[in-house]
Image (cartoon, rainbow, N blue to C red; front, side, top):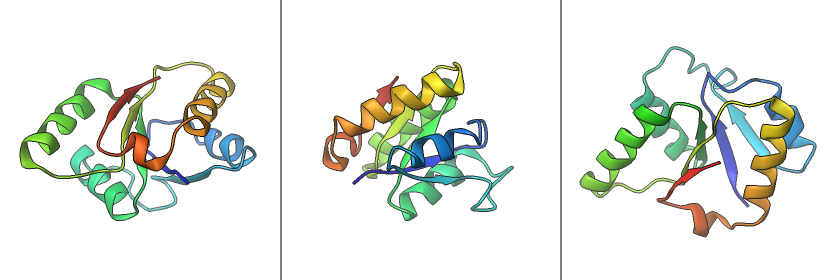
Length: 111
């Protein structure tokens, strides 16, 4: 099963929409991580063994490249384009339901 950690720019409505589809979602808000830096957010997701969901393409592409250079593993980074939260939930659910945690581990994905 894939666990998902959302950064603070992801609409909080996404969590109940994905939970309704049987997915486990942890938010920045409930982890008291609002205002923390991107690297700290990603490291927190790694500690929780979660894939990381963000809209922040530029920073997380850079962080992905840094992790590769450092030889550090992660549970996947998913960069989603901004769209209606219901459409985003549908796309994320379809993406996660068609892949295993092993498939997305240490990978950068765009949806």
